[in-house]
Image (tube, rainbow, N blue to C red; front, side, top):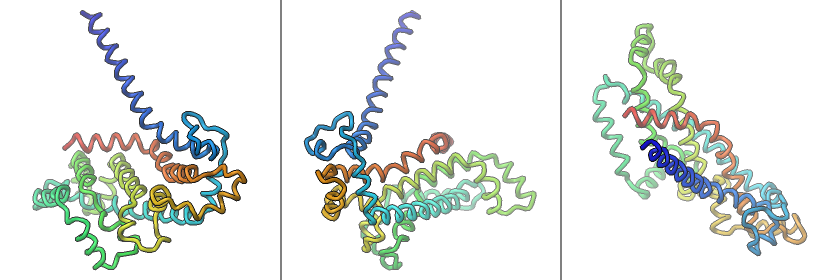
Length: 294
């Protein structure tokens, strides 16, 4: 009987490992393929010879990308939108989650219900656009941040985490003369680093990858984030402006449109790929605790 169970357990482990390896391959290979194409000779890319390994390695595509001032401008815009937007998101989410986590907050259940309804019912694109327009936010960076200042899902995770902090700590702070904001700043937030890191990751990734609001609200191309520029390059095929740079990068056109597109993609996703491992432990812990305590 024990041998049978042991054999079944081993079979399960083998199948589990095989499935996980397959999922890893499915997830990693597209990024790996984009990278090897971006550093391979354009002639070989055009002939479809790049499959598993880069061939005739060249970084001319990245040189062309770095010479494009629009890339740097869009990159700077994205960094600004991500930094300011994430700061606004985290602050407002904490200010909303804290009172709703207090069981002595009058009308708490009513407010929670009203907030939760927004997860299932929204005004739609046109009403939101009209509100943004009436507020004079069109063609400003605030149109990308204020309409999505608080995510209801993220707020509920943070609220649930706050509820798990012992009330005795808050009561002792009140006895020492602390007010609500001091309790939030000096007691709640220092004890909530895992969920705060989770919120920073959620919101930062959202802002970094966001392109649709910029397409809707921004008219000035100088204010476009890098994702909109990437979208225009990949989908709209805006590569004609780079013809001169491509020709000067290599006389035999070792850089083609595909190299250029994939190089821009790598440069765009690289910051998230670098930052995620440092926040992963907080992300897992914060999301799990916020989910389980509900």
